Image 1 (cartoon, rainbow, N blue to C red):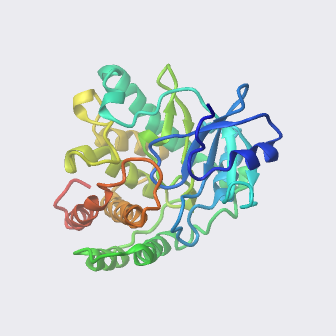
Image 2 (cartoon, rainbow, N blue to C red):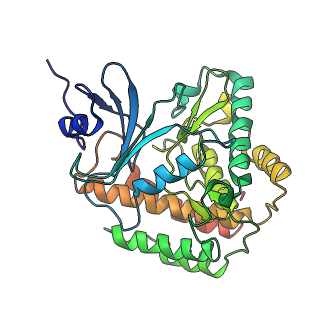
Length: 338
C-alpha cells in the first residue's frame, strides 16, 4: 500500500522534476510557518521547504531568499545544510520550493527532548549556540555575495512599520495595547551599531545539534536579511526566557534552568565579549522581539481559523498574542528584565 502524500506536495510532478524513482515524503513537525518535508527515493534523503498553504503575506515566505543565504554561508564558520535545487516554478508542487541535504542530529523542541542532556551538556550546547550566532554576525556580507541582501540603513525603523503592516494584513480581532506598543517602539528606536546578516528567528529549535553537542546546522532562514545584530539577540532572549514568562506556551519548551540551561544573561555576556557590541539597549530589542512574535503568532492563528494550516500545534497560538503584547509593554517600561 502506498504512503499517503502529505498536503502541499505533488510527488509525481516532483519525481519528474528531480528525475528520480518513486518518492516518499513526510511532514516534519515543528515548523509553524513554511512547510518542511523529509523526502526520499529509497536511496537518497533530502529536506524540502515550501511556503505555507493558503493566506501568505506579501514579501513573506520567499524561497529564493532562503536558498540564497544558505548557499552563501556554505563555506563560512556558520553550519548550514548543503542546498541542491531552487525551483521557482509553482506548477511542480503548487508553490516554489528548494531542496537541501538532511542533516543528522537532534532538534531540541520540548523539555522531553532536552531532558536527557544533563546540566553539563545543556550548558555546553547553550554556549555553542550563542557562539554560532556571534560567528554569523562576524561574516562580512559582501565577502559571501550578500552585499545586496538587504538595506541595513533604517533597518529597525522599517522593521517596526513592516511588522505593524503584517499585523494589519492578518488581523481578525482587536488586541489590547498593540497600537500603544507600535507607537512606543517607533519612538524609541536605538541606533544600530553594526550591519550584519541577521537570521531573524534564531533559537535552539531552529538548529540541529550533533551527537557531540556542537551545532550541526542552523535552519529556517526565511526571515534572514541585512540588519542589526541585536535584533537576533533580543529574539533569542524572548525564546530563551519564555518558559518562565509564559508556562505551557506551544513555541518554546526545551530551554529551562531546571534542565541545566544557563540564564540568558550569561549568554548575553559571552556574546558581548565575543562581538564587542554594547548590549545596554537590549530591552528595546527584547520588546520588539515580543511584538514580532505576537504578530507571527497572530498570522498563524489567522491561517488556523481559516483551516489553512498543516500539522499539529496551532490551536493555542492565538492565546499567546495578548500576553506577549502586555509583556513587551512591561519590558519597555522596565518592569521585566530586558
